[in-house]
Amino acid sequence: MDSAVPVANTAVISVKTDVLDVKIDLAGGDLVRVALPAFKESIDSKNSFVLMDQSVAHTYVAQTGLVGTNGPDASATGRPRYSASAPEYVLQDGEKSLKVVLSLPAQDGVEIRKIYEFARGDYLVKVSYEIANKGTAPWSANLFGQFKRDNSKDPSASNQGFGMSTFLGAAWWTPEKSYNKVALDEFAEEPVQASVSGGWIAMVQHYFVAAWVPDAKAKNTYTTRVKSETGENFAGFTGPAITVVPGTTATQSTALYVGPKIQSRLEQISDGLELTVDYGMLWFIAQFLFWLLVKIHGFVGNWGWAIVILTIMVKAAFFQLSATSYKSMAHMRRVTPEIQRIREQFGSDRAKMSQAMMDLYRKEKINPLGGCLPILVQMPVFIALYWTLMESVELRHAEWVLWIRDLSVMDPYFILPLIMGASMFVQMMLNPPPPDPMQARVMKLMPIVFTVMFLWFPAGLVLYWVVNNILSIAQQAVITRQIEKADGKHA
Image 1: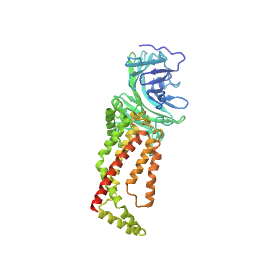
Image 2: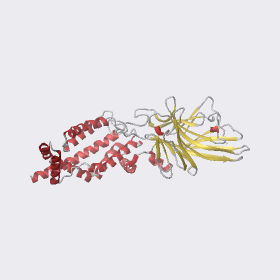
Image 3: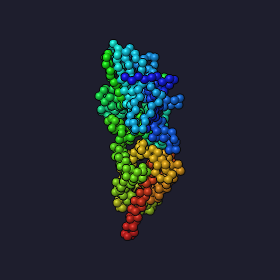
Image 4: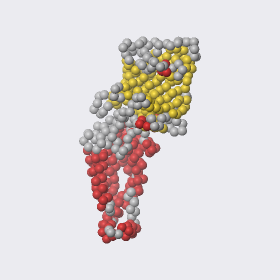
């Protein structure tokens, strides 16, 4: 067995691979800092995005240990202090993996090594405990893994609008339901206690996830709790007790994923882990749209143009349904003068006015709700597409053209929101004015209200709305012109 030499005056060691830059505290052997070199703090920053950290301002760490009868982490004196053979470990060019071995001094003849194994290009880390019992009595303990996090906000979240915010909290798997979750601010009110064979438990935030994936064959207990003295939140698992008889060696392992929510990799690790890309209630629609977006990107090589093409394809799928809506609006626009005449004639008698309008609709074969219903049918797809664009880490720091250097943040010059507002105004002009004067005034304000709202939306979402509005204007203008031309011939 390799022996580790204590690192003089070092409480924390560093480990660097091509995708991970981590710090390990020798007190407990916990991951107290995880930075992701492939992801920067911002588009102009040279600093890596920090997913986990332990500082005065922020606490978010991944802890593992051995508790139970003989577990060193169950000691009343605090976490055990490990030793390492070097203060820094680096995955060298040409190497596929990197092993970091931490050791504890032998206690009653029992030697314990905590081993981290990192792989090139992967955010999955294997954490193992190797227990060699050279004593005279059986040794027993339980492996645990947990996340400790304060109540600070999600650093990777952006402005979403519409009152929709990305999820921040814990998620876990059960055989009955592949994706369960509880928000961070609800840990105290809804503590989790679940006994599951295999599975995983994760701390989820916008774009990134940290997940413990214990032995799939073992029965693990998943829990969440809040430490009342500090207000810190915990989410993790405890495995079954293992016993190591004298003269034998046993190994207990778990896996830790710390990185971006890349669905193709997450689904390889454990069933349901890809669902931490939280698309909400319409996930089944959003999942298909994301699959389509990835396929399109494979051809065009740019996420901005992929959004444009996807929007065109969605619009094409609803072409006939949209046409029905626009035809209804065009017919309503055609009879607007007659509606106005009815309002002036029966303005003081609402019953007669309503009856006269119904007679007009019947005569002209117009469904007053015909312009609304097709749009309502399309709304689930539009909302699902919203979440597809919002949750996809692939769009983070993705450039489009010219001034749009990051589709995941707002347009720095507000050009797209202003184009979106102008397109909404053109759409409004093509629609028949509401019969009610108050509604008409409200409708005139809508382009302004939406423009202000969209100023802080991620550029990728605004791009979708702009393309959708332009296509809608083109389709509606053609249909309106056709109907007006047909009416001119019959006049």
